Length: 251
Image (cartoon, rainbow, N blue to C red; front, side, top):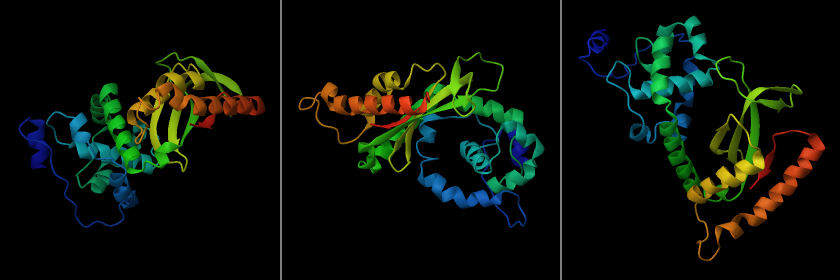
């Protein structure tokens, strides 16, 4: 309580988590996933790219809370209004989690596109370096996400599951062949898989993929030519067979 009062007066910094014996804590099973979250890089390089003003909650509290909410299948922050904040606080070793308005403000502060992009790129380079064999053959998968809001007027995309043209955005996931994700591109205005590959995905792979041939011995244009034309053939065949606008293809 003293830490919260001092933080509200601007005289105290973030408080440390403190766990005590408890029973029957809802959603506490998400703590079993904490080692996997840390191993995947949830807390790597975060302090290099994100900062928060001095307040009651630490940066790690917010990252863990968002990860735990996703694991608990809490679909939106609004759903937290119907959850007991003290029970979620026990999971984080706090008296309570922030209220929805405070959480939105802090996530908006942290969610600046340049900071998130730099953090994601650094994690992607690290994942590829840890498993260079998986980074040699990648799977590009496009997904259409239907937009249900009203604040933005997005172009319409064909949604194969509903067989309708709806306002949506397109996500391109670049994964290893075993499904491990390396990075994702979000495109509100989608120029198409082939153009995104040529202008964004391949240039990024040239910067981040490990163990590439030297440019003098194998120029970039020749390095990607065979894979790109094989990809065009696969995408064309799949479009003819399914009529879908988003496809997964190997690079």
